[in-house]
Image (cartoon, rainbow, N blue to C red; front, side):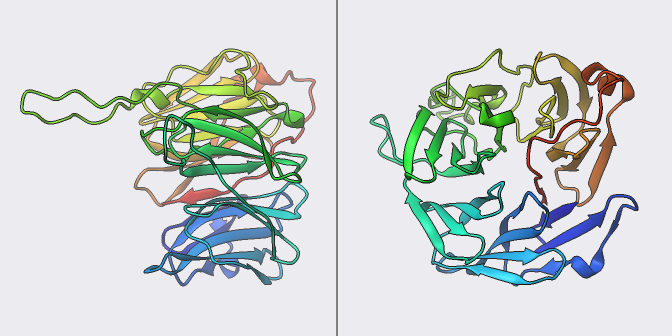
Length: 333
């Protein structure tokens, strides 16, 4: 497992012993912004600030075994999210000012972009990019705004927008992960369809905090039309900051203010609910464990899913779940 932290380090862990592989630790000179892991586990890609006063970023890919470092060209402002294509050939990054950019993993050169995320007629301001994710066939990528109110799908080759849903607007910044399902049929995301309104003035003339309850629902969107597929996942009462889809697309886990919920993906059945203050989470490749971090805690926790939950999803005669979702990285604040 690979983890990243605001302490400027990326670390690798032996899951059998629970200990860090210390010789693999990498220390960035400046604050790390984000990290991604290639699907084959070979490359750890990091974005860090190299000139804080002018907000210049540096993108690097480090080979897990050889420690060879590749640098990606260009000047860009605050890469907030990155992803490596499933075939390992492309790196995509969402910048604060420069839209979405795509680089060659082999040469480090910019090969596509910038893809400009446009505002609609209802707002003159373009959305801030919160999450970007390649499709499994590496031909498309999806963008989610940082407030979970806009979702877009773009074509890599034509560099054109295929489809979008949602409007621009204020709200809680969540940057919750998004996922493509098997054969890129659909996209799973936390989404907010409600218009944000200014809170009413209280008796003293002050406005209350903005509403938080609108980012508590997970939707499945058809990848071609972005129309909603099936029933949403409902049950959280606070914004969902952590989201994970199992590698075989059978289970989905979500983390809100004080709660983790575990669902059967196809049936939408709630399988379990746990009280814990979780920040981010990810399934193991076998889908039998959850790794997660907690708010204000520097530890990584491994949770073994109960046998009754596993047996309810996979009958005893079934083999090990087939991997269909790429590996992800656990970031620790």
